[in-house]
Image (tube, rainbow, N blue to C red; front, top):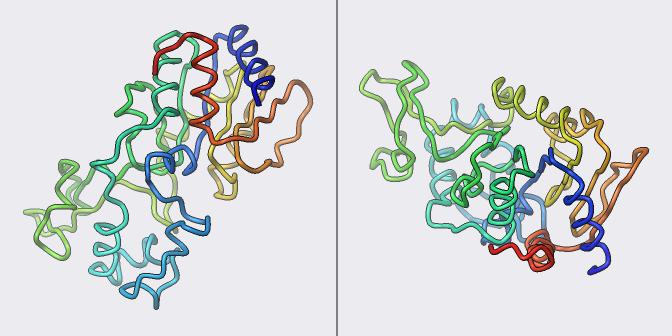
Length: 252
């Protein structure tokens, strides 16, 4: 792996417009479960939810038609407020401070990139750390849904207060998509990590990349074959960035 990390260092040294595109694997090293692995949320046999399909529990239909079920699942499985960023989050924040990284595009809803210090983050699946009323649009702090004593939290106007995440059956947030696509289109280097690229339409965003160097850091290979320079590093992304930071003399 060291030879490939050295090659990645050379790519970064020669780049000044890097974008990172990441998924659940970026946060698993912080203890946040992913969705589809053997230990992921979809494979956790919880008796409270076993009669439901996992995708249903994270769907607009569940929120609307069985809100008590939706909120119980959300409070039990989506609370990452006490989770800390790992080496991957910290390295990307450091790379942004160096002026190399221009944006993070994340499929995660945990806010760990911002907690690590990243400033330009496009959350294409929204965030569990913001809430709003579905009726009047009033915004509520990140703790509100998790700490509400109501099974289904309600606004003063009577509307349901929901987390600002993109559920199944819902469209992605326009502003985050526009920013992500613009950033990827303008990048000279795209680093992809911690994702299976199986969730669409988010996974299709990498098709907008037209830059020089494509880097994949993942435990499994991805079908992202293209012309030009492509580097694959088979590793956990946090571990790879720790080695990279050592080579660069970057403290994370």
